[in-house]
Length: 118
Image 1 (tube, rainbow, N blue to C red):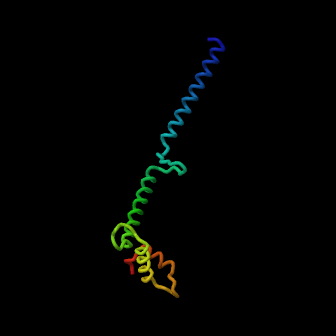
Image 2: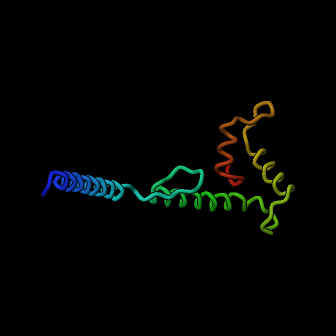
Image 3: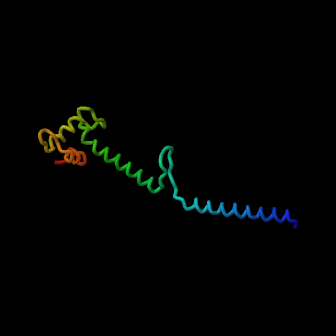
């Protein structure tokens, strides 16, 4: 083999070996990366964290629906302004008032427990 052929052959083999090594390294890196769920404008999260977040959202929806049920006095599935105001007036009457004002801690407690509390 001539000098040019030897140089060409050895540089081509080196390039192939380097390209193969890089391809294997990239494949190993991607194989170890976690599965992600991405939506436009949102930070990628793992599938496990995404499932946990979805479960939390569903639990909050159910809790919200349960919290709203006592407000719906006539049971029509809708809350009128009168029903809303009556519900919160009943909560207000159950709170300990000081000079006509309720402590924030009492407000938070009533929001957690609803009108059935106290």
